[in-house]
Amino acid sequence: MLLGALLLTGCATERDAVKIDDSGVASLNVRAVLPLTNQDRRHAMVEGRPEDGIGGQSSIELEYTFLEDDADQSLGPDDSIELDGEVFDGPGGVDYRYRVAAFALAFHAMQVFESGVAFGGFGGLSSHTLELDGKFEGTRDSVDVFSVGPYFGGEVRWYAPARFHLFARLTFSYEIPDERQSVETRGVELGGVYHFSRYFSLGAGYRWWRYEAKSDGDFESDLELDADGPLLTLGFSP
Image (cartoon, rainbow, N blue to C red; front, side, top):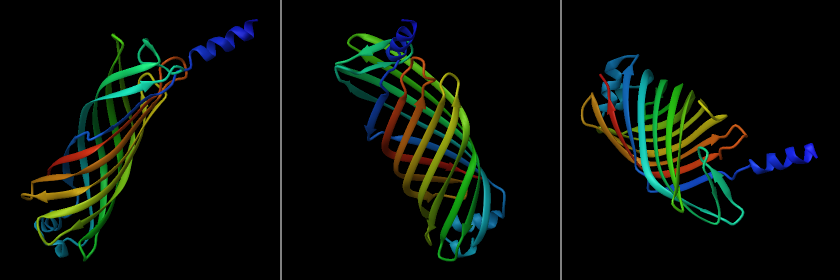
């Protein structure tokens, strides 16, 4: 009898994941770069003279990224999700409002070739804050997740003989949250950057990004957020 009750209780606490698949979500990225190697070579590249920037370069980069949007999730008759204590039992639709803020501090190393092509990699620490509000048939609940952990990735750039470069970038982080088991993020970015001067740049592109927060196995639902859309980047450097 006791074993049966425990099994029943365990089944009762299992929840479906909060799944948000959103597109057209604009992300703002602000990046400050502190070069650690020869400044003249970096200045040559951003001024349209990539042949004078050949060789290895390194820097410390501080990033801030923000995105916010509305989304929804359909629940079937057997679906059940829980945010921060409130249970939403299907069928029906859940309306969400979410906000994500991310900080990253990383060491960046890059090798520039005569053609203007550059291969780079970076690693450091990142932190994400997710705020999620949900509404289901007049009932509201919200959840906040804060996490910190290692962050790394790689990229390919092509510096044109003008004041711009094209880029393809991969990012990944594995973070420890305050109340859940783990947070993982993965991103792919494609776009271009125009350098107005040695000190300021403006970029635009597209970003495919995924956020996963695993629960601790007790009550709260896992959180799965796919947010794809335009990317705007502001860059600063001495």
